[in-house]
Length: 339
Image (cartoon, rainbow, N blue to C red; front, side, top):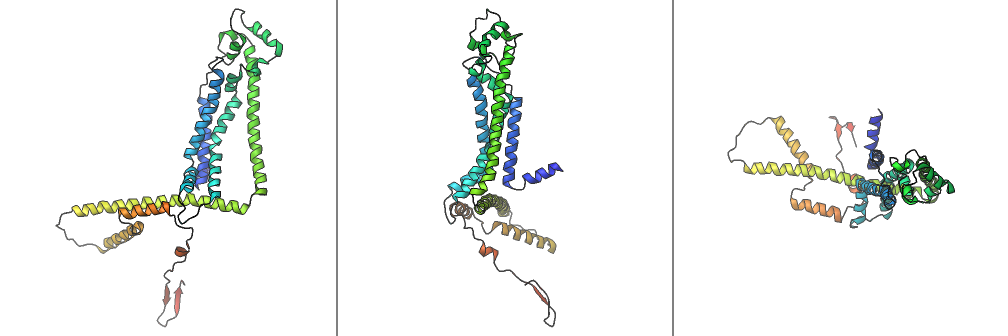
């Protein structure tokens, strides 16, 4: 029941599909992080560089992946780059599509960053040799070092602190110092993560509450309507092109075989039902072709669609005359009429 409801929701429109794709990317980012075996180099010159790379590079990849799979990206670029033709451009629609694309593309990167901060391993590797770790217990830090390690290690304080993320290192055997430093830095990491999450929630709530006070809701509805219209229009055009291409290809193949057929014709009686069915099928195919029967006509149609899209006025086809049926008896009395 719930799966069917979710499937119906995500198939309702492109906005729902985009939301579903973004949620899937966010879940994939969490799965990637949990399955990723993070190993800190434990070297002073590489710890921070490697950790920041793991924290920044995957979100960048997820962001561009979110932009790539978002349908609003293609619709926005088509509307922004197309010639004006017979239809004027609406900058508000392009701005709305750009904003929707950025918001959805940022979901997966933010989830990755929050998960890494709440977990704390990358933060410990990056800042174990910084002042955050060295300030632990103040003057008692050296006492913990000397009490937990042999005196003949020959390592300075910076190199020792760089090995804090490596719990299997022999210099921290039977020492509580590494655990104390890790807990201290993990607290900072989780505090930063929860603070960012709280800030994002507050910004979203404030945006919801304050936006109606400054924006015209009618203008927003118009912008949203025409952004959805552009998406639906492109879908319908693609579907119509697919149907036309299928019927066009079928006509070409049938015409080829008809031309290659031998001159001798086998004459057999043709049942009327099959003749009527074939005529109906041909009429349906002709309707799908819309009179476009040559390559030059197809190229001209596609060229006109891009360079001179039709104006947003369907009065001519919406109010075209239709046939009305009226049934009368022998005396001229109306029995039924759909006028």
